[in-house]
Image 1: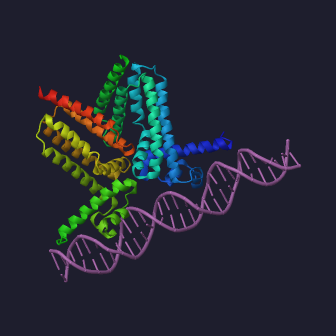
Image 2: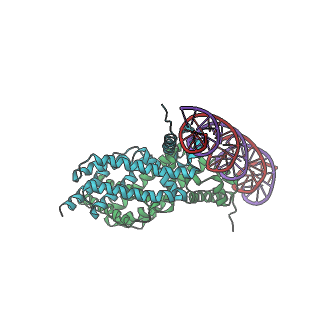
Image 3: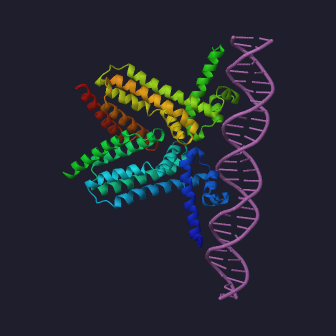
Length: 199
Length: 199
DNA sequence: TTTCACAGACCGTCTGGACTGTCAATATGT
DNA sequence: ACATATTGACAGTCCAGACGGTCTGTGAAA
């Protein structure tokens, strides 16, 4: 039985459009993600798309929030089933790695690059990114049980490494070097947490 | 005095078009880099552009080679005025950092992202990237005077960090954390070189 | 005279967005 | 409870502009 109330219908179509937008960003890239492709891919009329999002720009802005939300939920879900403390470090690193190599992150990457030259995307992505970064660190530091500057530093180095690996992985096949490089960041993180705990 | 021979004229226009393409990639991004914008920006007619590069695709393919060439030259120039050995490490790291935060690299980044979903760009960028990577490592290892696996590893970690920083720097203002993170990679590299030399 | 680097008009296609039409889900009056 | 008016979630057509690429013309170098 399909949804009956207007609110249900509205929410469902809206979410479907956002998911399709993400899928198109992954499949066709930012340059190839046209509103027509999105509507075709979503099996929705032109009127429907423009009813929910008055312009392509508004659609992308909404997609940015959508992606950030999914990302945060994914990390939170991973953090929830861990007992806080030092032992959670490898699991959290792995969770971050998984989140930053999935298709959601690819879509985000497309928008991230677009933000450099598209001011509309930029002014939507910048604050969203700031907030996401803040919330991710909150989850991460709480799960680790420390937020010492040194842990923070190692965490930032890990994030930057994961971004670099994501970029590298776009062209090269998955290097086995990647594992070792991440292990080095994990080690930094562990010693930083150790130091923080023993003081 | 403008060039007189046909060959000079041809080479000059061709180079001018490639430089303009790079400039447009930097200013407008991959999605916004249209052939019309390039010809307007270059002050060249439509016929001229399509005379040199039969299609947009061919122009981008040529631009890929152009960017790789510039990148390699930049690093080689930096390496040339260094005395090989351990003391060259900080200088080489700085040279890589500079090369991977300039506008040439931005243009390359646009094409790198485009390569993910555009098979024509991908099949041109992938081999070019492989060769560039190989030559860069040759220059780097020769300047350092060692090519031990551990040095190679630290070098790869540095490259990936620099890519991650480039990506991060697109949205955030230049973090002072960046310096510290690079310093950590530099330190890894130095100890790896030390180990290689003392064995 | 021939060649070729370039000029610029032209064409079919695609894009984002405006627009009007339709019909079921609601709100309202009785 | 029922009939009727209104809203809103879509459908689908249309259009001006921009896109990449073709084609013919032109003038200076060879």
